[in-house]
Image (cartoon, rainbow over all chains, first blue to last red):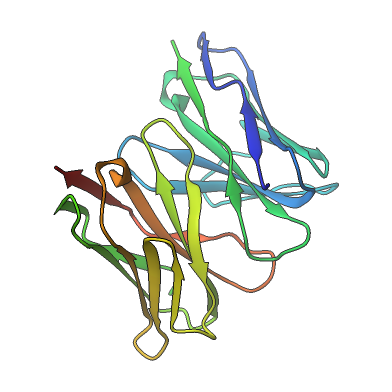
Length: 116
Length: 112
């Protein structure tokens, strides 16, 4: 149990285009999902906290107009990178917290974004 | 106040040995302490977690030791195997719907 999927696993896009990444909790409902960014050999950097049915809470320094987050259901959250630039290239990982607990957090497999 | 300090940054252990990774925190509101294992190109996987009401938790070869007074917790991997070679992250959070605070990670290499 507690499986989180992400789609796509890898995406290459041209500078200036937008990319949408999906995060799904497959076998549980998640009232809260989190989006992280990870650079090579570094720790996870929290970008935003997403609660179902409400606006996401963004961490300081994260542009909310550039990284659009939608948590439309208890099993799906999406991250859209708008007008992507090469500096947005990174490993994006989502995680989901089951509605039954206020502690555990399960991560997806990540999405490698490359902007050319 | 929000930091979780993790050490060592990297660790090399012989096959069959014990791997020990340590974390320290300052925020006394933290009451959930998980460890995650991450392989290259993959998302972190929840390995084991502890709450402050116990001082130790064991799951298979993995043990968390927790010292509330010292505000420290550690991960012990017994009989370390080459397949354990990965990056390990400690984390902490207070109760409620708040994000985890992660340590910087430890790259473990288990050599035969």
